[in-house]
Image (tube, rainbow, N blue to C red; front, side, top):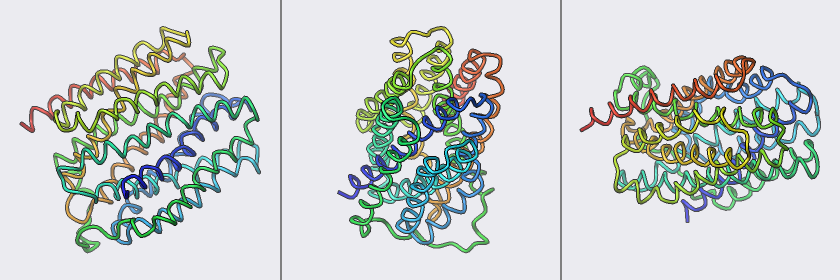
Length: 379
């Protein structure tokens, strides 16, 4: 029941978050924003998380997950509702910052909660079930956002999305006693050096692989609304295409508890990067909706199977009492790339979508080679 409650809470909070990324992009396009401006908006989702994630992880190690989840849920609701009251590009900039920062705290808290459950042998399976929540919300968020935009407009859709984290707060209240308290022995502040975590080979390898996979995930979220609008697709159609990506992640994660018991983590990570890289290489060559859905599904298969394995690798290598901090370091590294890459890809989009997709292909295929080396080194 505890894991089920965490999964449902994640579905509700992440639906608002992932829907907002599509909604903010399409609303900015509706207001005649350039690709670079959209890239800046997506970067703002990650700017403060990049700076604050380690501190958030340390706080969660110290006080547990309940209070951080409650306060970040309130900020997430406020960020989602803001563009309804302030329907202008500056309002979107503020909203993106609030939404991204609040969800960072939610994400670190929930990962910490799942990692603290069960034995180390159960961890990959627990994270596989947990990852299903992101697949469900990743499917529902864009699809619901697209239908709502076409039916009611952009501004009411912000309020609709805000209702989901509001429901998650209600659920948190009823399950507040199930949330874990401080996990592991408390360390003195002088002992908590980030550089020590980065020097650990097992952690460093997982951090690098996690960053590359997150780049692939975030690029899709950033580029698909722009690419779909450029070839004349409606918001509903873009939502359906992005929903096929989420449906694939859901499908593969249903199988992950079985896969996690049969294959080693680095084997799955290497295969994930190869599949995702091949899918990205084909996107610029098609514009038919059915083919875009098929490629999105293939990409979702690749990217969807890796996250539970990455989190299992991180928790297995985490020092005692620093699990939240390790998740915070991972979040900082991911958001550093999330901050810079939308700006870089937004500028590169001026040359067309092809260079953007093919550069991501090169990153992912290189990452697959790196993961194969990590697998060999761990034998």
